[in-house]
Image (tube, rainbow, N blue to C red):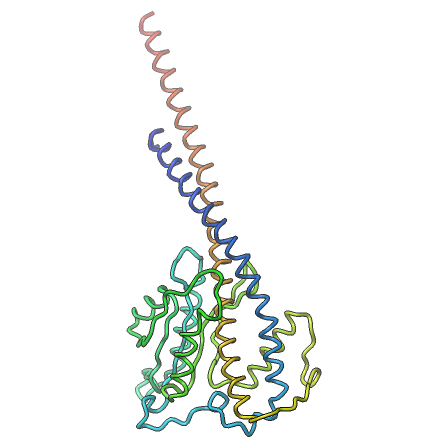
Amino acid sequence: MAGTKEIKRRIKSVKNTKKITKAMELVAASKMKRAVSSTLASRLYAGYSWEILTSVAENLEDNTHPFFNEQEIHPGQPGGAGKTLVVLITSNRGLCGGYNSQIIKKTLHKLQEFQTLDVQGFRRPTSGTDIITVGKKGDVAMRRINQNIPEVFTDMPDANIKISDINPLAKTVMDQYLNKTYKKVYIAYTHFTSALSQKPIIKQLLPISKQEIKEMVEDVGILQGRSLTPGAQKTDYLFEGDFNTLISTLAEKITRMQIYQMFLESNASEQSARMVAMKNASEASGEMIDDLTLVFNKARQANITREISEISAGMASLN
């Protein structure tokens, strides 16, 4: 059994660790409250904007804007047969449970789907796949597998995210797609469900899928307690001016809004996961302190018993 001094040092060390994890839990809880509030408020705006786009979906059939149509990339262009871009959103710091590992694992599975089996049974890329990483954890993971990473964004704020903060990333993604560098653009993020549940999701960002937009509208409607069955809230709009110009502006704003919403979802998920992880760590520290205190008391009692036995033996020898 370890000595009482060593046990006391361990108890002191665990107590100091518990103070740190408790402080981190309180900070994460404060950030989570603001992040969740922003996420839920933004969902309402995103839901109405997607409803508008769904209501004019029949007019998009004749629309030639590239955001709504799959790019036709020729071999001589930068994308070759059609490269794919994946935007991976992770955190800069750890200590947030399985938040980063879950979305990274799902991204790796998605990268495997972009490959096909050749005649020998080995997987080979159908076309190039690039990864734009947001956060240091995702960047380290993608570099470990030698994935091509054209750009890295690690200076995103972890609280009070504004739409202006994601403008550089949104502009990069949209410009690269319009330049036909990429045929499709996906975004990997973590959807916030509750403080105890976060779901990693990979969605196609470009070209904008009308079917996915309708599904998003229905999901937002469920969250808001509204029924959004097809045709239930159909609205006819009158357009003044050039229709294609209006749709182009609308498409860019909705794409930017999608990216912003996914950042808010990921941030709320990160703070929630970190709060739960630090809470579990604090509880585990408390249990460890109780166990070490019991061991310490047993060791101290054993020392007292031994000393009493030695004194008694000494007294007996004198008699």
